[in-house]
Image (cartoon, rainbow, N blue to C red; front, top):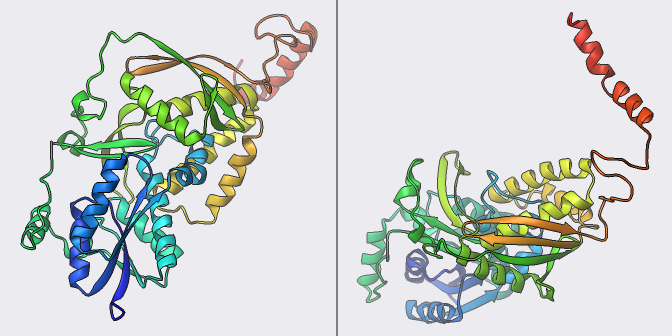
Length: 399
């Protein structure tokens, strides 16, 4: 074993990483598999992945519970920035991959590995995210990408493993599903072009009954971080998981995102992200109550930029930490409660309150009387406010 080069493989337990384990072992590597749990892995699945790793010949397997790391290092900033790419997609996969890459590098360092590997193909965004993270954080490690390098088809991978007595289950169903704490992505024939709709049955929550009664709930935030559900204090990971379970029954946070991939082509993906949509909708409304208009304007710009850097594989650019500092500062007064009502496939914000509210009926009521200025003062303000426009219009020959 001492003559072999040690490699850490980011391991999901799917066909691609199963192939990588056997292939790398046959290339003379001592393979350690690492599964980074960012949500979506029930205990029985983690046990199955561990058993599969041993069956494939890995020298060791490690499971890293990174759900809290995912929230504290990534999701809290996506909430603070109200980040929805294309105004719909909550960047669930993007955040997971960055977190998984960081944890894989950490394990490689701890284990004294000489190489690190992933099972991404050469077609999608994940290869770029893993490559950039591995090269940025651990440039001294050899980077190995068997699936991309060999360019094998799924059937060729299955045949390779079958020849060695390893029979992976065939792909079940017509849709590929990637479930995580911040959402589930769904791909199928409908997402390969821009017109077809994904059927409800393609989503993990299945078809949603139309006769569900409305469900009212209250989400609390403390300095921008979700901290309680219906008055019960709970950690953010538990709260996210609770909202996912509740929101899924109503079909909340379902959609299809069409946008630009890192490689420069258009892509389309279905998603189901109940907690992300419920929390971002709630958080945005709370911010409207406690932040100034100029803060809200710049936060929208910063949030979009932060989301783009994460999604497009630029998470290790120094600008990311600068933006996180801004987002953290902006959350100092984002404390309060938001009342939501869930209906089948949609949610409504009914009310919001905060000890830091900037809306004070004792001072002024929009469109009604107030105590801060007189009618004549308002008339003077309105006149001065329009002077520049009046002069511009006059200069163009307006009457």
